[in-house]
Length: 372
Image (cartoon, rainbow, N blue to C red; front, side, top):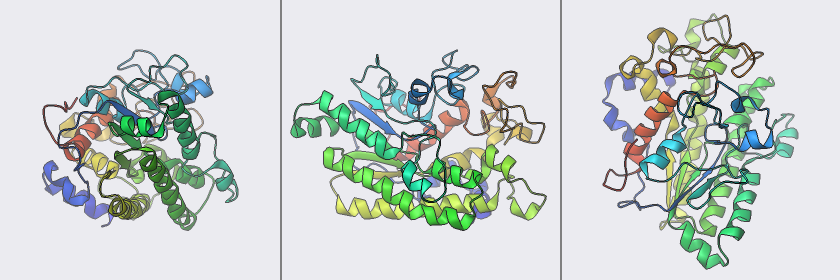
């Protein structure tokens, strides 16, 4: 389905039928009571690893964190992220980052790092793509294995504990494409990356299953053609390149190409492990549903793709040379009225709406799950 057709359907259908577009439910979670959560990924889920590795990182400076924490935490938003809302819904504490030496890891760990790629830096370098972070998905998996050694003494003990946990394997892979796109790679080059990115994600999921994971959520990619950074970078006067929401068709079609391959791989893995719940989280449709009905959620219609924190003298309030967190970059009066926080990441309000949407379809509603 083309991006324009997706949004046309979204404008007609009730928000309660999105499961028809491939959002599985965790069939093994009819009465989900989790003791821990583990997160792998990039800036969509990083709760403070990048800022501990590189203290001067943008997401560690004001005004990041202003809405909920009233100070920066390393989260690349004005407040909470999707993983935070899942933690609240499951009555678990917010996940501390793995690199926090004083972190409390009793109820899980966050291994996600802003800027992280699925493929190793060396693999991308061989394709003439430069990545600006070393903590790739496979590095995060190594961190997890090191954590296990401290958490339990035998493989059977580890499996018992991990069987009571919920895992998020992503969102990851978006930065592989972001770096490639920003360095002038063609859409053909990006599409050629997809199978290897998917293979790496599935390798990690298989490793997690072997270690004892029983419930794993694997998020797909966002509708990147709707993301402010892409809209600003690939702006064109050709109106045919945009859909009715002002999103770039070709980039959304690329995101769906990635997501289709990811869902096929998940289905294949699920068939190999029928006693494990491996679930696709449809971040694409979750965000698309918000954009299609943005004003009903309180977002400004004329600021649908405009960054709240930014300095661009353009339709998107985005300038890659002077981004949010840089000196003198202003912030909009009310982040709750914007979908985009800094042009690359979303606001807390948008993430909360995405989390609510995802929780409806991934976790059955019962007394043990409280939607934030």
